[in-house]
Amino acid sequence: MHTDLIERNPVLKHSFDLALKVIAYCDLLQEQKHFIISNQLLKSGTSVGANVMEAQNAESKADFIHEMKVAAKEAEETQYWLILCKFSNNYPPCDELLFKLNEIHKLLGKILATSKRKNPFNYLLSYSIF
Image (cartoon, rainbow, N blue to C red; front, side, top):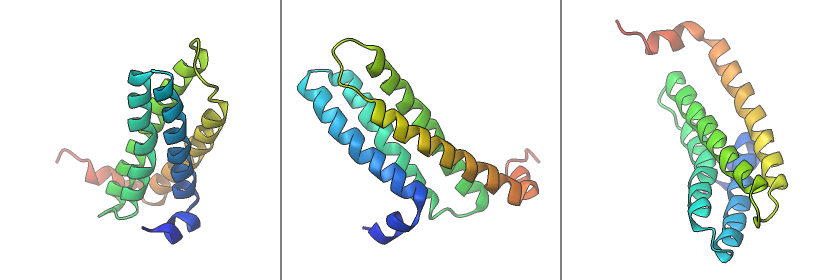
C-alpha cells in the first residue's frame, strides 16, 4: 500500500482517515440495524478517498480534475447521509465525521480551483465538442 504517499498528501490523508471513521461509524449503524443508511454511507464515504487516490495516477490534467470532481461529488453524497443520521432519531452522533468531511471539502475545493487556474485553456479544450 502507498502509506508514504498517503502520509505526504493532505487530501489523501484526510480522505483515508475519513474512510476509516466511516467504516467504524457504519459498524455502529449495522449493530443498531440501520442497514440501508449504513450501506449507502459506507459506499460514498470510502469512495471519496478511492477517487482521490485514483487521481494521483491521472493520465492528464483533465483526468485529474475529473477524478477530483468525482471525489467532491462523493463527499457531497456522504454529507447527505451524515446529515440524515444527525437529524434522525436513535442514530449515533456523527459531528466528528461532518467536521472531517468539511475539511475535505475545503481541500478539494482548493485543489480544483488551483488545477483549473493553472491551465484553463487546455481544460476547456479537452471537453470541446469540436
